[in-house]
Amino acid sequence: MKKRTAAVKRATRETDITVKLNVDGSGKSRIKTGIGFLDHMLELFAFWGFFDLEISTGTCDLKVDIHHTNEDIGIVLGQAFKKALGDKKGIRRFGFAGVPMEEVVGKAVLDINGRGFLDIKTTGIPVGRIIPSEGYRFEYAEHFFDGLAKHLGMNLNIRIENANRDLHAALEPVFKALGLALDQATQIDPRRKGVPSTKGVID
Image (cartoon, helix red, strand yellow):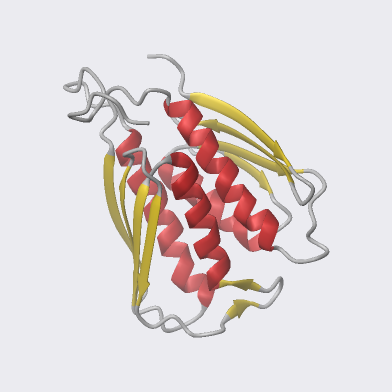
């Protein structure tokens, strides 16, 4: 099977981000985004998805805030997956996973269908809670997932149940579930000889 790898670099006036991805990896990661919490979440994502993932940043406007870097990493990661998957022949396309962390349950349900879409529903997310060390907020995670979904071309539904403690506990099972679900969706099904769509193509 052809190696499903990609390297994508995106430089703007606000951020400079490079992503190297091997979809069929072993879960190794080297991630330095400048946002410690996001680094940790992406390491979990790569580990549980068996993706080899390197992310590095050049000059970014972190001195302003973390918003642009966080969102643009989602965009570039989505572009890398889209590039690595190519014409998507033989992939399973759909993925689902749920992960518990004490009373919190994070779920990711996805479809690599060429149409980027994100929906997040939560119960119990503490309003205004942040990661104190760097001001990471729940809406930043939403922006990351949105960029990833739209630039990969993935319908991504996220559900977080009983997230009534802190933001770390709410998001960690989601990133793990996303890794598991995306691994499932990108696996090659030997029964599928072409593109997994009755249209015959996934954009």
